[in-house]
Image (cartoon, rainbow, N blue to C red):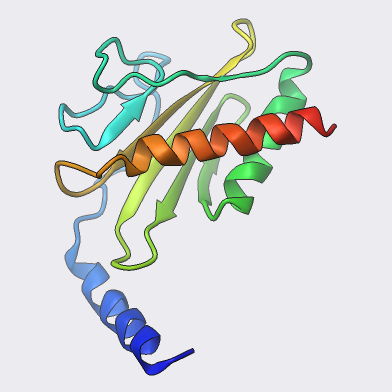
Length: 149
């Protein structure tokens, strides 16, 4: 590791305590993922607003296999899982340069054959498409995993 990487890592580690953390862990609201906050740094498959709307992760076959594949993909793609249940998963992804943390949540709807997703930055207003891109990357990995089983 070069000196620049060490310096950035040390600075990020020291400054991360200054950035706000969620006061409480994310959770379902009335059985659904939380609404996006109104800033363009969030996407959700359960939003009715076109600015935030993104397609859920679709699957056919066993919802147990799909859910297990998703949990594996989240970890393989660099996510940290904080809460996982039979139908809800909360994970975080940390951006490598400045250490910004994004919350990524999933809700299994076995009857619909989909996994709903919400990805949101904790800070700022715009994320320059990072959350939408992350969901599409997770979707691609999820579909590949399902087709290789």
